[in-house]
Amino acid sequence: MERVFFSLGSLLAAVAVAAGAYAAHGGASFLTEEQASWIAKAARYQMYHALALVAVAGAIIHWPKHLRLLQVAGGLFLAGIFLFCGSLYLLAFSGMHTGYTTPAGGIAFMLGWLIMAAAVWIKRA
Image (spheres, rainbow, N blue to C red):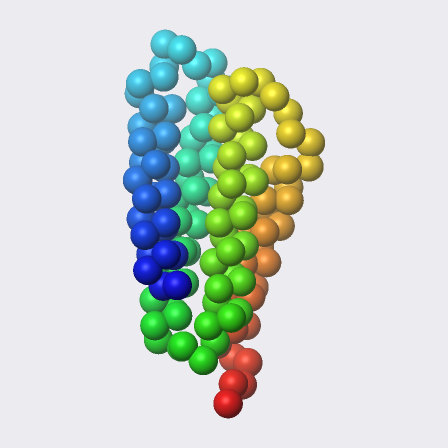
């Protein structure tokens, strides 16, 4: 599972760099300032959580007894990327508001961090 999280984290980080560069440079003539801001925010949070996936992969190797909780944390980071960042990209490119999708993604991010922090302190035999 650590390979999956490491690979997805690395790929999502590369996409975050591309999205951030597009918002800052390439899309300047196509995007409004507000659209560029949404893309930049999505790219920033995507990068943070892509790196968190890489950290989860390392944690799984270092604390294999906590595999299940670390997998949950990684799954929440992925969900957060798709919900939070994806809804911002969708808003920027289509103007479509997705209701509570963005905050749900933010909650997934927070829960992922909390579970990741707690995972290594819970006693496992």
